[in-house]
Image (cartoon, rainbow, N blue to C red; front, side, top):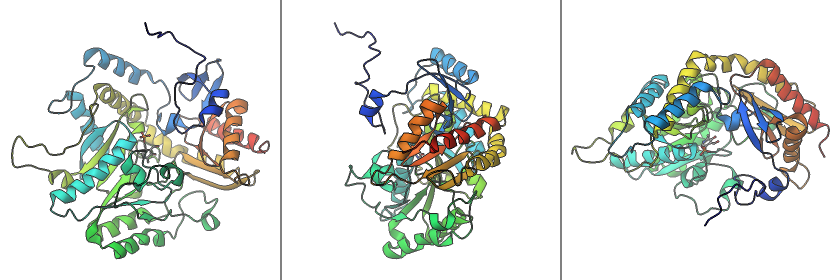
Length: 443
Ligand SMILES: Cc1ncc(COP(=O)(O)O)c(C=O)c1O
């Protein structure tokens, strides 16, 4: 008989994602419990979460209304297929999300993750032009340093070299990437968005000139480059991208997997920047991280292009077994209630100066070569150790966990903070001061 007894000390079988496995398993960081702003590790040590889980636990950990909704749903309707059948909560949650979205984004396609959201949006963009008889529009334009998840579409339009280099050839028609709208020499240490980013948006005109607009389907960008290291958009940049897309009939997809649900002080960052994209990808914060869920908000114009004359004809040949999973829908509804009842998007906005002040106070600390912040996201970039990129950041992350009881995120040598929207000003200050405390000890 197969032995299924727990083997607590064997860390070998689980191949960990985005982790140096051997080193981790020799020095494990095992989290056993969480509540509000804190984790407790397996030894009972209390650890401040500087990262809202992985940019997702926007209302803090283990919120009772969400846990209750998931438990009740599991007992009532554990699963229902979304192909040819459905259940009431999937329509309720889609309607609630549409109500929060910019005008004309009237439809939601549910998926299970941010990666699936990105690939779904890219597929819809190509299929939209096919449906309109413009199938020659197939190119998908991404941006340097962008992260759109790990599936082939998102990887192809993504711009983080280490994530891409082992997996080529990537998706055809995705070779063009806009420049990252940032130049450390000119914009480093600027507390918020800076002026003068037009040339970065105008790079899209150059791509259009090379290929012809009639070969391009869509442009996909994160409003704020997140996993690539927190780069706020320059003032007017997203609005200018929108105008260029309009001029040439290109779809604009905003990947708001990180920025949606309060991270930039609004339900969607599109609202902060006053633009209406054609699609918005979301995930993470929609369930407060409690159940995997993602989705794509789609404009009426795109959705209606898939209308079929025959009643039996399928609109979109796409979907997942777990599209609209009842547990995820229940969690999403309870999460949106919590965000509204506790005014968490507004709270995130009100906390923006506290986070910005706390991290920018680290200017001049050892190894700090740049500091960036926007909304409830901040980055402290360290000078890489000579010949060993990533090593200094890794040491800092480990020391912060062990010596300062703080979890944060690494992007190369950049330390990233993205606290839950329930954080207190004191907790935010503590995060920055913990970073200061370890910087002086780094090799
Ligand atoms: C902007 C963006 N898109 C997509 C993803 C991928 O999401 P997931 O890890 O849920 O697949 C992420 C994850 O951080 C993200 O930040």
